[in-house]
Image (tube, rainbow, N blue to C red):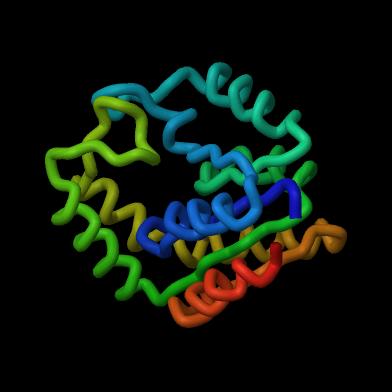
Length: 170
């Protein structure tokens, strides 16, 4: 496990898992939101995003957390592990609201400086609509790349058990 993608809709715990996994493995973490946005939630030019992502993916070891569906094939061609966190929608929404409440008006380490925790209707609409569309894409990517280790967690308990086992993997 040297080149890892963690995917799943907002609120599933991608960032939390990436931090645990990085601590256990020493893999450097890249949060795709940091590559995609600038202060005030302004999109970076796509060419800049792709250039910076290419630089990360050129490394021997990395852990990339985030979706950005257009870049899935780019990442999957060089990844050796895909971790899909696929929690029930109600749980994602609860976590999104809890995260927003905890961080309202503040930045987070996995977001670019100047981006505060969002909760606009467009974001909630994306959370509500993304899982069915993305589920099929992630499954297709896994099927197209049988050489990639594919881990699919469908409950918070499975993720917690995986994290607990990380200390034993070293």
